Length: 354
Image (cartoon, rainbow, N blue to C red; front, side, top):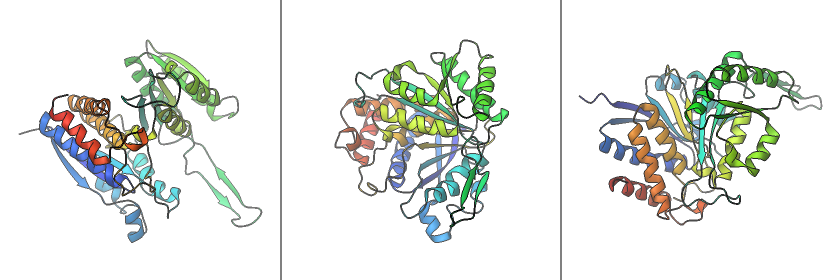
């Protein structure tokens, strides 16, 4: 009996998620046949359409339904007729927090055929390790005197020693397997309590990891340096907000936010991890068949690697790069291929053994 059996929950979600998730499952199914593992997909029709029918983004017991799976593959969340805080806090963020997916891993590099908007950029290869369950994205706070001239809002950022320690350790250990360079994003000159605390804990943790060089850089200076000298950076560890913004910036520097993946990881593997592209639901192009599936496919590669199928994960990335090297590019990258055409090119690359 094949012990390499995986159960993965599919949440295609909204907009182009409905197009790129099926593309990813086609490719993963082909990889499963080729590499000798079994994949069982559990479709979850959750998202904005579910909200319009039931008044919530997922069932009351949605977390429980996902809890016995091996992983979650998510497409996109967001609808023009729903506030973003309703869609994210109704689905994406609860999954991240209930399953303690405290590492948001966002690798970015320049892929074949993609032209960076910057001059002479070829060496960009960066991984952002974003703290994913606390920091600035806290539910602590509130609003008072709504609708009056005295209305105010309070939003508390929450930084714990445990939270900073575990994400810093993950980032440092990752840096040790790469080029040994770790940059910590901070704003300790202006955010007087949480950021000096972040700096202190990160420095303490990294000092225990041999062969890793740490530099702590103010977020504004870091954003500028990434534009001017992206090749200088390897692994970046950042708080929830800073990591979110920096990873979108770096994806744009690499040519398109449509190619960038992410992994929401529970490193101890006590709970399933979730894999998703960083792009949104893109309602302006949804249903047109032109969405770029690379971010979703790359996310599926991260998922396969997490599940222990490293050869299949590598084969998928090789096939993506082969298709792109052959000039099969979607419109956001200056090409003419649609979602299905690009997916078919990846499948051909896999079948040819590339």
